[in-house]
Image (cartoon, rainbow, N blue to C red; front, top):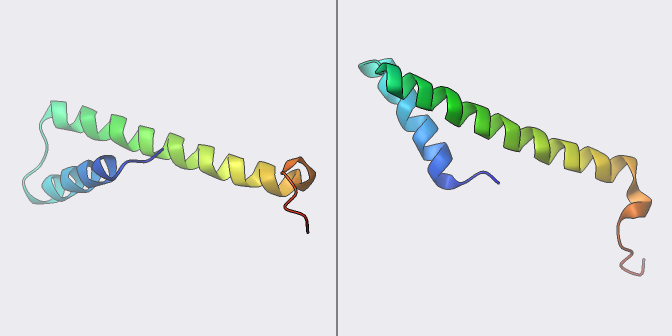
Length: 63
């Protein structure tokens, strides 16, 4: 799951990178945060695609 804090931190580091630059530690943090974000997005997309590919696996709501 993607937290608001993760998105805020990624955005903060991006803005700092553009204005004054990042320390090596911040660059590593930025890299890890971006990878965590991308991993979560990929998981969400895979889940949606699985639902599309296997609609019969979902519980029926009576319709």
